[in-house]
Image 1 (cartoon, helix red, strand yellow):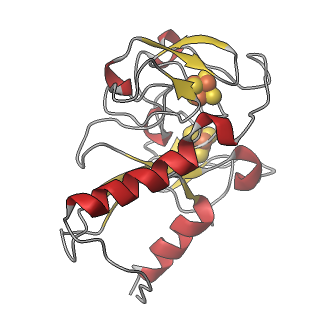
Image 2 (image 1 turned 180 degrees about the horizontal axis):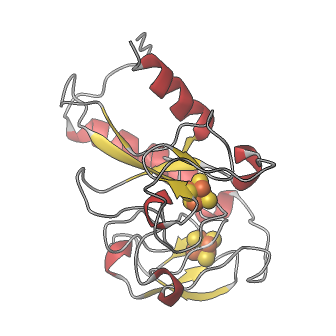
Length: 208
Ligand code: SF4
Ligand code: SF4
């Protein structure tokens, strides 16, 4: 695979540069998210998710390790780790799939099944989020990223150095109200989100 970028060396200055880029992409005053109600944002409470981060792996629409009942066979869906091994200053990261149509339940472990008229993964906002470490039992999205999940940039807590994953509650800019760490909704966003089109490319590259 062609990789046309400069590899950051393990120097404090490079870490500072990455932090600067992430602050620029995630800081609240650069964008004005729409203010929505629970229905418009497909809000799901922590209790409805059994206090778990959300991904295809706890959604009943998932044809386990293969696809989603909504999108058809052509959209390959499963978690993946990339790069496979630590190399060139990069460490393996595990990415987990999820979309805005997520509901809580157990995946389909049998033969693949699909709805009659499949839906668009673009409309569903299908993408992949990164887990804090590879090999977790569950990962995925939530407001604050607790329990092995990934946090939402639209969730604010007090202080600049606070660890969101340890906070019980934070302020959601879309809901304009406080939410619990393991609440979530379809407006979730993060600066390291991988779209399904990017992931499709990676899957194609890794095939013989
Ligand atoms: S793509 Fe969405 S609806 Fe389909 S299994 Fe994953 S979370 Fe559920
Ligand atoms: S913080 Fe993010 S994921 Fe949580 S409710 Fe708000 S927009 Fe949705």
